[in-house]
Amino acid sequence: MQLTASFSDLNGASVFITGGGSGIGAALTEGFLRQGAKVTFIGRSDASEFVEQVTQTTGNAPIFVQGDITDSAALQGAIDLAADRHGPVSVLVNNAANDQRHATTEVTDAFWDWMIAVNLKAYFFACQAVLPGMQTMGQGRIVNFSSISYMMGNAGYPIYTTANGGITAMTRSLAREFGPDGIGINALAPGWVLTDKQVEKWATPEGLAAHLDRQCLKTHLEPRDVVETTLFLSSQASRMMTGQLIALDGGVVTTG
View 1: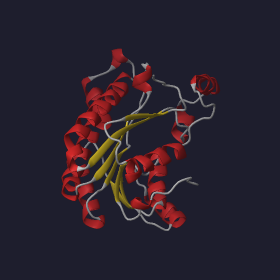
View 2: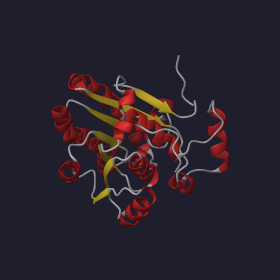
View 3: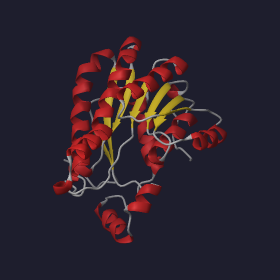
């Protein structure tokens, strides 16, 4: 992955990424490693092969913790490990999510609880786990991944869009609460990023053409686009940006 920018303050930074072993998360892990950051990531599936591959390509080895982010104790333990090995987490990227499609009339209590646990609860408790260390340092950056899906009023996954609206609200409240401690907290809302999962499950030629027609910029988003924006939001280059929702979507959602 070729990056167009580098951020010197990320060199040596202790970075924690949820879902950092596959899809956009894997691209994020690689991107931070290429900045010289000390990266720890958590994921449910075994990422040992990815760790070996990315270590070879970047010359920088991440720490992988296999675990479920919906288990708050396991999530706290992974963040504690990152702090023990790399120093207090100075950058948190809440990336892990699940946009499984579902029909409103078929949602059960159990499915609701699971979707909210993955897409909202884990974000809150990851923030809770890193904030004390950031307060002690007097600085920190948090990037919470949202989505433009709720801004567009998309149908087909109402719990996911509900959670994304909650992420934006949570981000704004935490930014206000912890801004006096020097901690910047923003939400990043990507559009349709063509990962392997998206191509395999949902990207049809007709759907892609229709979405591209809605974009101002007539190029599909790639993981690299998300990585570079996240690096910016994680660095001191964006030190006076907080409480923001940034749409990274080629201009599907526009305001003004």
